[in-house]
Length: 200
Image (cartoon, rainbow, N blue to C red):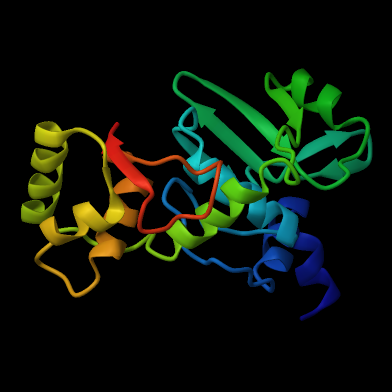
């Protein structure tokens, strides 16, 4: 590509194109409202936590360009929480990013997630996000919700027989957790047969 063609691109476009060259596991997302583009493995990990954060409605990757004089920076995310939103960076952002965000009307945060403390939640979120695109039949959804209505919270192994229209009932349960139809504790231990499921 010619130098003139590169110059026509904005800093935001260049940042997104560079991020396109990176692939991080897991690839699925459930609340990303644009293309999932991550500059680092840490950014991908934070995105996993955004997907299972009950306060987060949706999020955008590399949403916009901030500037301070001749300096340019693209935050990792814009995070929507109901009627509010904020820009979020995870990897050593420039010190001026917060002030630049404020000048264009955005709240700004620099990685509010402690990945060490949240390591179990992150591991469970990664496992769940393998099923980000999994489709659950209406019949299976209704059967599981009826079961929980009748008996209250139940273990995965006791819920699984209610899932009948798939060869992978765990995938259906994971998909419903990701879509906040049912919920489970993600913080204390790895997801297993005795993990309890309840209605949201």
